[in-house]
Image 1 (cartoon, rainbow, N blue to C red):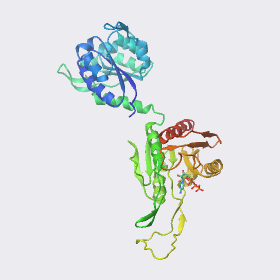
Image 2: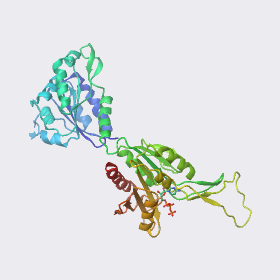
Image 3: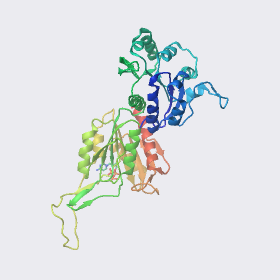
Image 4: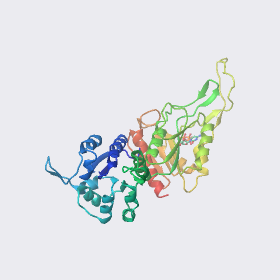
Length: 401
Ligand code: CTP
Protein backbone atom coordinates (compact mmCIF):
# COMPACT_ATOMS: atom_id res chain seq x y z
CA UNK A 1 0.00 0.00 0.00
CA UNK A 2 1.41 3.32 -1.12
CA UNK A 3 0.56 5.15 2.13
CA UNK A 4 2.75 2.85 4.24
CA UNK A 5 5.35 4.89 6.09
CA UNK A 6 4.02 8.25 4.90
CA UNK A 7 4.10 11.09 7.47
CA UNK A 8 0.73 12.79 7.23
CA UNK A 9 -0.23 15.89 9.21
CA UNK A 10 -3.97 16.21 9.61
CA UNK A 11 -5.13 19.72 10.48
CA UNK A 12 -8.62 19.65 11.99
CA UNK A 13 -10.82 22.77 11.97
CA UNK A 14 -13.95 23.66 13.93
CA UNK A 15 -16.79 21.85 12.18
CA UNK A 16 -19.24 19.18 13.30
CA UNK A 17 -17.69 16.99 10.57
CA UNK A 18 -14.56 16.76 12.75
CA UNK A 19 -16.03 13.56 14.22
CA UNK A 20 -15.33 11.79 10.89
CA UNK A 21 -11.61 12.42 11.36
CA UNK A 22 -11.48 9.78 14.11
CA UNK A 23 -12.45 7.12 11.55
CA UNK A 24 -10.10 8.56 8.94
CA UNK A 25 -7.14 8.42 11.34
CA UNK A 26 -7.97 4.81 12.17
CA UNK A 27 -7.97 3.89 8.46
CA UNK A 28 -4.71 5.70 7.75
CA UNK A 29 -2.92 4.19 10.76
CA UNK A 30 -4.12 0.74 9.67
CA UNK A 31 -2.66 1.44 6.21
CA UNK A 32 0.72 2.07 7.85
CA UNK A 33 0.79 5.89 7.72
CA UNK A 34 2.26 7.97 10.58
CA UNK A 35 -0.29 10.55 11.65
CA UNK A 36 0.27 13.79 13.51
CA UNK A 37 -2.82 15.82 14.33
CA UNK A 38 -3.02 19.56 14.81
CA UNK A 39 -6.29 21.21 15.73
CA UNK A 40 -7.64 24.71 15.81
CA UNK A 41 -8.93 25.81 19.21
CA UNK A 42 -12.50 25.64 17.78
CA UNK A 43 -12.05 22.04 16.62
CA UNK A 44 -11.45 20.88 20.22
CA UNK A 45 -15.07 21.79 21.01
CA UNK A 46 -16.26 19.19 18.47
CA UNK A 47 -13.92 16.29 19.17
CA UNK A 48 -11.39 15.91 21.96
CA UNK A 49 -7.62 15.95 21.44
CA UNK A 50 -7.54 12.85 23.66
CA UNK A 51 -9.61 10.88 21.12
CA UNK A 52 -7.42 11.91 18.20
CA UNK A 53 -4.13 11.46 20.04
CA UNK A 54 -5.18 7.95 21.15
CA UNK A 55 -6.07 6.99 17.58
CA UNK A 56 -3.04 8.63 15.98
CA UNK A 57 -0.70 7.36 18.74
CA UNK A 58 0.82 10.86 18.87
CA UNK A 59 0.26 13.99 20.97
CA UNK A 60 -2.23 16.40 19.40
CA UNK A 61 -1.01 19.99 19.01
CA UNK A 62 -3.33 22.97 19.31
CA UNK A 63 -1.16 25.91 20.26
CA UNK A 64 2.41 27.06 19.81
CA UNK A 65 3.06 26.23 23.45
CA UNK A 66 2.48 23.02 25.40
CA UNK A 67 1.23 24.40 28.70
CA UNK A 68 1.99 21.20 30.62
CA UNK A 69 5.61 20.93 29.46
CA UNK A 70 6.36 24.53 28.50
CA UNK A 71 7.60 23.26 25.13
CA UNK A 72 7.34 25.23 21.91
CA UNK A 73 5.73 23.47 18.95
CA UNK A 74 7.95 24.25 16.02
CA UNK A 75 5.54 24.79 13.12
CA UNK A 76 8.32 24.79 10.53
CA UNK A 77 9.61 21.43 11.71
CA UNK A 78 6.11 19.93 11.74
CA UNK A 79 5.51 21.14 8.19
CA UNK A 80 8.89 20.06 6.84
CA UNK A 81 8.64 16.58 8.36
CA UNK A 82 5.31 15.96 6.64
CA UNK A 83 4.99 14.05 3.38
CA UNK A 84 1.42 15.34 3.07
CA UNK A 85 -0.69 17.90 4.92
CA UNK A 86 -4.44 17.36 4.95
CA UNK A 87 -6.76 20.09 6.19
CA UNK A 88 -10.00 18.31 7.07
CA UNK A 89 -12.62 19.38 7.74
CA UNK A 90 -11.62 22.66 6.07
CA UNK A 91 -14.13 25.29 7.19
CA UNK A 92 -15.11 28.40 5.19
CA UNK A 93 -13.12 30.43 7.71
CA UNK A 94 -9.90 28.39 7.38
CA UNK A 95 -10.23 28.24 3.59
CA UNK A 96 -10.49 32.06 3.57
CA UNK A 97 -7.46 32.36 5.83
CA UNK A 98 -5.47 29.96 3.65
CA UNK A 99 -6.38 31.96 0.55
CA UNK A 100 -5.38 35.24 2.21
CA UNK A 101 -2.28 33.89 3.94
CA UNK A 102 -3.43 34.80 7.45
CA UNK A 103 -1.53 33.22 10.30
CA UNK A 104 -3.46 33.45 13.57
CA UNK A 105 -2.94 29.92 14.95
CA UNK A 106 -0.55 26.95 14.85
CA UNK A 107 -2.60 25.25 12.11
CA UNK A 108 -2.18 28.22 9.75
CA UNK A 109 1.52 28.56 10.58
CA UNK A 110 2.03 24.88 9.67
CA UNK A 111 0.07 25.34 6.43
CA UNK A 112 2.10 28.39 5.43
CA UNK A 113 5.38 26.60 6.21
CA UNK A 114 4.51 23.53 4.11
CA UNK A 115 6.62 22.48 1.15
CA UNK A 116 4.88 19.12 0.66
CA UNK A 117 1.60 18.43 -1.18
CA UNK A 118 -1.36 19.97 0.67
CA UNK A 119 -4.91 18.57 0.46
CA UNK A 120 -8.04 20.22 1.82
CA UNK A 121 -11.46 18.67 2.32
CA UNK A 122 -14.12 21.37 2.72
CA UNK A 123 -17.12 20.97 5.02
CA UNK A 124 -19.80 23.62 5.50
CA UNK A 125 -23.44 24.41 4.93
CA UNK A 126 -24.64 24.52 1.30
CA UNK A 127 -25.05 28.30 1.05
CA UNK A 128 -21.69 28.97 2.64
CA UNK A 129 -20.17 26.58 0.11
CA UNK A 130 -21.96 28.21 -2.84
CA UNK A 131 -21.06 31.73 -1.75
CA UNK A 132 -18.90 33.47 -4.40
CA UNK A 133 -16.28 34.40 -1.81
CA UNK A 134 -15.86 30.74 -0.75
CA UNK A 135 -15.73 29.63 -4.37
CA UNK A 136 -13.14 32.24 -5.29
CA UNK A 137 -11.07 31.29 -2.21
CA UNK A 138 -11.21 27.64 -3.28
CA UNK A 139 -10.06 28.63 -6.79
CA UNK A 140 -7.19 30.56 -5.27
CA UNK A 141 -6.16 27.63 -3.11
CA UNK A 142 -6.14 25.36 -6.13
CA UNK A 143 -4.12 27.90 -8.11
CA UNK A 144 -1.48 27.67 -5.34
CA UNK A 145 -1.26 23.91 -6.04
CA UNK A 146 -3.38 22.72 -3.10
CA UNK A 147 -5.58 19.75 -3.94
CA UNK A 148 -9.23 19.70 -3.03
CA UNK A 149 -11.02 16.56 -1.89
CA UNK A 150 -14.46 17.72 -2.98
CA UNK A 151 -17.39 17.94 -0.58
CA UNK A 152 -20.37 15.69 -1.18
CA UNK A 153 -24.07 16.28 -1.67
CA UNK A 154 -26.40 15.09 1.05
CA UNK A 155 -28.04 15.95 4.32
CA UNK A 156 -26.12 18.61 6.22
CA UNK A 157 -25.91 19.27 9.97
CA UNK A 158 -28.40 22.13 9.49
CA UNK A 159 -30.96 19.64 8.17
CA UNK A 160 -30.75 21.18 4.70
CA UNK A 161 -29.86 19.02 1.74
CA UNK A 162 -27.15 20.08 -0.68
CA UNK A 163 -23.45 20.20 -1.38
CA UNK A 164 -21.05 20.79 1.51
CA UNK A 165 -20.72 17.51 3.42
CA UNK A 166 -17.19 16.45 4.24
CA UNK A 167 -16.12 13.57 1.98
CA UNK A 168 -16.41 10.21 3.74
CA UNK A 169 -13.24 8.91 5.46
CA UNK A 170 -12.74 6.04 2.97
CA UNK A 171 -13.01 8.50 0.07
CA UNK A 172 -10.45 10.84 1.63
CA UNK A 173 -8.19 7.84 2.17
CA UNK A 174 -8.63 6.65 -1.46
CA UNK A 175 -7.83 10.16 -2.71
CA UNK A 176 -4.57 10.23 -0.76
CA UNK A 177 -3.67 6.64 -1.72
CA UNK A 178 -4.28 7.39 -5.39
CA UNK A 179 -2.10 10.48 -5.24
CA UNK A 180 0.59 8.52 -3.44
CA UNK A 181 0.48 5.71 -6.04
CA UNK A 182 0.83 8.25 -8.84
CA UNK A 183 4.06 9.52 -7.25
CA UNK A 184 5.68 6.08 -7.60
CA UNK A 185 8.41 5.89 -10.28
CA UNK A 186 6.78 3.06 -12.28
CA UNK A 187 3.19 4.20 -11.84
CA UNK A 188 1.03 3.19 -14.80
CA UNK A 189 3.78 1.05 -16.37
CA UNK A 190 2.99 -2.53 -17.28
CA UNK A 191 5.52 -5.20 -16.34
CA UNK A 192 5.83 -8.87 -17.26
CA UNK A 193 7.93 -11.22 -15.13
CA UNK A 194 8.58 -14.92 -15.69
CA UNK A 195 9.55 -17.10 -12.75
CA UNK A 196 10.05 -20.64 -11.54
CA UNK A 197 10.94 -23.82 -13.37
CA UNK A 198 9.05 -25.49 -16.19
CA UNK A 199 7.97 -29.11 -16.10
CA UNK A 200 8.21 -31.03 -19.37
CA UNK A 201 5.95 -34.07 -19.40
CA UNK A 202 7.45 -37.46 -20.25
CA UNK A 203 4.25 -39.40 -19.65
CA UNK A 204 1.10 -38.74 -17.56
CA UNK A 205 3.03 -39.12 -14.26
CA UNK A 206 6.60 -38.01 -14.96
CA UNK A 207 8.34 -34.86 -16.05
CA UNK A 208 11.76 -33.28 -16.60
CA UNK A 209 12.26 -30.26 -14.33
CA UNK A 210 14.83 -28.30 -12.34
CA UNK A 211 15.34 -27.01 -8.80
CA UNK A 212 14.20 -23.41 -9.39
CA UNK A 213 11.94 -22.23 -6.55
CA UNK A 214 10.73 -19.05 -8.27
CA UNK A 215 11.96 -16.90 -5.35
CA UNK A 216 13.97 -14.45 -7.46
CA UNK A 217 11.18 -13.80 -9.97
CA UNK A 218 8.52 -13.50 -7.27
CA UNK A 219 10.72 -10.99 -5.39
CA UNK A 220 11.14 -8.95 -8.59
CA UNK A 221 7.38 -9.00 -9.26
CA UNK A 222 6.74 -7.78 -5.69
CA UNK A 223 9.30 -5.00 -5.97
CA UNK A 224 7.98 -3.79 -9.36
CA UNK A 225 4.48 -3.70 -7.86
CA UNK A 226 5.76 -1.65 -4.91
CA UNK A 227 7.31 0.80 -7.37
CA UNK A 228 3.86 1.32 -8.89
CA UNK A 229 3.91 -0.99 -11.92
CA UNK A 230 1.00 -3.11 -13.02
CA UNK A 231 2.60 -6.57 -12.87
CA UNK A 232 1.80 -9.89 -14.56
CA UNK A 233 3.77 -12.84 -13.20
CA UNK A 234 3.96 -15.87 -15.48
CA UNK A 235 5.03 -18.66 -13.17
CA UNK A 236 6.00 -22.25 -13.70
CA UNK A 237 5.19 -24.72 -10.88
CA UNK A 238 6.16 -23.03 -7.59
CA UNK A 239 5.03 -23.41 -3.99
CA UNK A 240 5.22 -19.64 -3.41
CA UNK A 241 2.27 -17.36 -2.76
CA UNK A 242 2.00 -14.64 -5.41
CA UNK A 243 2.78 -11.11 -4.15
CA UNK A 244 -0.27 -8.97 -3.31
CA UNK A 245 -2.00 -7.27 -6.24
CA UNK A 246 0.11 -9.04 -8.85
CA UNK A 247 -1.69 -10.89 -11.64
CA UNK A 248 -0.54 -14.51 -11.59
CA UNK A 249 -0.63 -16.67 -14.72
CA UNK A 250 0.22 -20.28 -13.88
CA UNK A 251 1.87 -22.41 -16.54
CA UNK A 252 3.56 -25.79 -16.53
CA UNK A 253 5.68 -26.32 -19.63
CA UNK A 254 8.09 -24.16 -21.63
CA UNK A 255 5.57 -24.10 -24.50
CA UNK A 256 2.84 -22.77 -22.20
CA UNK A 257 5.24 -20.20 -20.74
CA UNK A 258 6.14 -19.01 -24.24
CA UNK A 259 2.47 -18.63 -25.13
CA UNK A 260 1.65 -16.68 -21.96
CA UNK A 261 4.70 -14.42 -22.28
CA UNK A 262 3.91 -13.66 -25.92
CA UNK A 263 0.35 -12.81 -24.96
CA UNK A 264 1.45 -10.17 -22.41
CA UNK A 265 4.55 -8.94 -24.23
CA UNK A 266 3.02 -6.24 -26.47
CA UNK A 267 1.32 -4.35 -23.65
CA UNK A 268 4.36 -4.49 -21.36
CA UNK A 269 7.10 -1.89 -21.19
CA UNK A 270 9.21 -3.76 -18.62
CA UNK A 271 9.89 -7.46 -19.22
CA UNK A 272 12.01 -9.52 -16.83
CA UNK A 273 12.56 -13.15 -17.76
CA UNK A 274 13.86 -14.87 -14.64
CA UNK A 275 12.32 -18.30 -15.16
CA UNK A 276 14.56 -21.34 -15.40
CA UNK A 277 13.00 -22.62 -18.61
CA UNK A 278 13.81 -26.19 -19.68
CA UNK A 279 16.07 -26.08 -22.72
CA UNK A 280 14.83 -29.47 -23.93
CA UNK A 281 11.49 -31.23 -23.84
CA UNK A 282 10.58 -34.86 -24.73
CA UNK A 283 10.08 -35.17 -28.48
CA UNK A 284 6.96 -37.20 -27.77
CA UNK A 285 4.84 -37.44 -24.64
CA UNK A 286 3.67 -41.00 -23.93
CA UNK A 287 -0.08 -41.12 -23.47
CA UNK A 288 0.17 -44.06 -21.04
CA UNK A 289 2.52 -44.47 -18.09
CA UNK A 290 5.81 -45.90 -19.41
CA UNK A 291 6.40 -49.39 -17.95
CA UNK A 292 9.87 -50.52 -16.92
CA UNK A 293 11.20 -53.20 -19.22
CA UNK A 294 14.76 -52.98 -20.54
CA UNK A 295 17.82 -52.36 -18.33
CA UNK A 296 18.49 -49.14 -20.24
CA UNK A 297 16.06 -46.60 -21.44
CA UNK A 298 16.43 -43.28 -23.21
CA UNK A 299 14.14 -40.43 -24.09
CA UNK A 300 14.51 -38.43 -27.24
CA UNK A 301 14.50 -34.67 -26.52
CA UNK A 302 13.94 -31.66 -28.74
CA UNK A 303 14.90 -28.05 -28.09
CA UNK A 304 12.33 -25.72 -26.59
CA UNK A 305 11.86 -22.26 -28.05
CA UNK A 306 14.04 -19.68 -26.28
CA UNK A 307 11.39 -17.34 -24.87
CA UNK A 308 13.80 -14.54 -24.07
CA UNK A 309 15.37 -14.60 -27.55
CA UNK A 310 11.91 -14.72 -29.18
CA UNK A 311 10.83 -11.61 -27.26
CA UNK A 312 14.21 -9.92 -27.86
CA UNK A 313 13.75 -10.33 -31.62
CA UNK A 314 10.55 -8.29 -31.56
CA UNK A 315 11.39 -5.84 -28.78
CA UNK A 316 10.29 -2.25 -29.43
CA UNK A 317 12.32 0.86 -28.56
CA UNK A 318 9.94 1.66 -25.70
CA UNK A 319 10.42 -1.74 -24.06
CA UNK A 320 13.07 -2.78 -21.51
CA UNK A 321 14.00 -6.46 -21.69
CA UNK A 322 16.00 -8.07 -18.90
CA UNK A 323 17.30 -11.62 -18.88
CA UNK A 324 19.20 -13.87 -16.50
CA UNK A 325 22.22 -16.04 -17.06
CA UNK A 326 23.22 -18.90 -14.81
CA UNK A 327 26.79 -19.85 -15.56
CA UNK A 328 29.43 -22.16 -14.18
CA UNK A 329 32.44 -21.01 -16.23
CA UNK A 330 33.49 -18.11 -18.49
CA UNK A 331 30.69 -16.27 -16.75
CA UNK A 332 31.19 -12.71 -18.02
CA UNK A 333 31.86 -13.74 -21.62
CA UNK A 334 28.84 -16.03 -21.72
CA UNK A 335 26.58 -13.43 -20.15
CA UNK A 336 27.73 -10.66 -22.53
CA UNK A 337 27.17 -12.99 -25.46
CA UNK A 338 23.60 -13.75 -24.27
CA UNK A 339 22.92 -10.03 -23.79
CA UNK A 340 23.76 -9.28 -27.42
CA UNK A 341 22.39 -12.50 -28.93
CA UNK A 342 19.01 -12.12 -27.21
CA UNK A 343 18.85 -8.30 -27.71
CA UNK A 344 18.53 -7.45 -23.99
CA UNK A 345 18.88 -4.11 -22.22
CA UNK A 346 20.72 -5.75 -19.36
CA UNK A 347 21.47 -9.20 -18.06
CA UNK A 348 21.66 -10.46 -14.49
CA UNK A 349 24.44 -12.98 -14.06
CA UNK A 350 24.41 -15.65 -11.36
CA UNK A 351 27.56 -17.62 -11.02
CA UNK A 352 27.22 -21.16 -9.70
CA UNK A 353 30.73 -20.67 -8.28
CA UNK A 354 29.39 -18.20 -5.71
CA UNK A 355 28.23 -19.68 -2.42
CA UNK A 356 24.65 -18.71 -1.58
CA UNK A 357 23.77 -17.87 -5.19
CA UNK A 358 21.40 -19.59 -7.60
CA UNK A 359 18.48 -21.95 -7.11
CA UNK A 360 16.33 -22.58 -4.03
CA UNK A 361 18.37 -20.36 -1.67
CA UNK A 362 17.08 -17.22 0.04
CA UNK A 363 20.15 -15.29 -1.06
CA UNK A 364 21.74 -14.41 -4.35
CA UNK A 365 24.92 -12.79 -5.63
CA UNK A 366 24.58 -11.14 -8.99
CA UNK A 367 26.50 -9.11 -11.52
CA UNK A 368 24.54 -6.84 -13.82
CA UNK A 369 25.87 -6.09 -17.28
CA UNK A 370 24.29 -3.55 -19.62
CA UNK A 371 24.54 -2.99 -23.38
CA UNK A 372 27.26 -0.38 -22.95
CA UNK A 373 29.35 -3.10 -21.30
CA UNK A 374 29.15 -1.60 -17.78
CA UNK A 375 29.62 -4.29 -15.17
CA UNK A 376 28.02 -3.84 -11.76
CA UNK A 377 29.00 -6.47 -9.23
CA UNK A 378 26.83 -6.82 -6.13
CA UNK A 379 27.54 -8.53 -2.80
CA UNK A 380 25.67 -11.58 -1.46
CA UNK A 381 22.21 -10.37 -0.39
CA UNK A 382 18.71 -11.63 0.29
CA UNK A 383 16.72 -12.19 -2.91
CA UNK A 384 14.42 -9.32 -1.83
CA UNK A 385 17.41 -6.97 -1.73
CA UNK A 386 18.74 -8.28 -5.04
CA UNK A 387 15.28 -7.57 -6.50
CA UNK A 388 15.57 -3.99 -5.19
CA UNK A 389 18.97 -3.54 -6.89
CA UNK A 390 17.63 -4.92 -10.18
CA UNK A 391 14.51 -2.75 -9.99
CA UNK A 392 16.43 0.41 -9.18
CA UNK A 393 18.40 -0.12 -12.42
CA UNK A 394 15.07 -0.68 -14.19
CA UNK A 395 13.77 2.65 -12.81
CA UNK A 396 16.96 4.47 -13.94
CA UNK A 397 16.92 2.96 -17.42
CA UNK A 398 13.19 3.33 -17.84
CA UNK A 399 13.27 7.04 -17.12
CA UNK A 400 16.06 7.56 -19.66
CA UNK A 401 14.43 5.27 -22.23
N1 CTP B 1 15.34 -18.59 -21.30
C1 CTP B 1 14.12 -18.54 -21.96
N2 CTP B 1 13.68 -19.59 -22.67
C2 CTP B 1 14.39 -20.73 -22.76
C3 CTP B 1 15.64 -20.80 -22.08
C4 CTP B 1 16.07 -19.72 -21.37
O1 CTP B 1 13.46 -17.49 -21.90
N3 CTP B 1 13.91 -21.75 -23.45
C5 CTP B 1 15.80 -17.41 -20.58
C6 CTP B 1 15.83 -17.52 -19.07
O2 CTP B 1 14.61 -17.10 -18.48
C7 CTP B 1 16.98 -16.59 -18.70
C8 CTP B 1 17.90 -16.67 -19.91
O3 CTP B 1 17.13 -17.18 -20.96
O4 CTP B 1 16.55 -15.25 -18.58
C9 CTP B 1 19.13 -17.46 -19.74
O5 CTP B 1 18.91 -18.82 -19.56
P1 CTP B 1 20.13 -19.85 -19.58
O6 CTP B 1 19.57 -21.21 -19.47
O7 CTP B 1 21.14 -19.42 -18.60
O8 CTP B 1 20.71 -19.58 -20.99
P2 CTP B 1 20.56 -20.27 -22.38
O9 CTP B 1 20.27 -19.21 -23.35
O10 CTP B 1 19.58 -21.40 -22.31
O11 CTP B 1 22.02 -20.74 -22.73
P3 CTP B 1 22.91 -21.98 -22.23
O12 CTP B 1 21.97 -23.11 -22.00
O13 CTP B 1 23.83 -22.15 -23.33
O14 CTP B 1 23.58 -21.49 -20.99
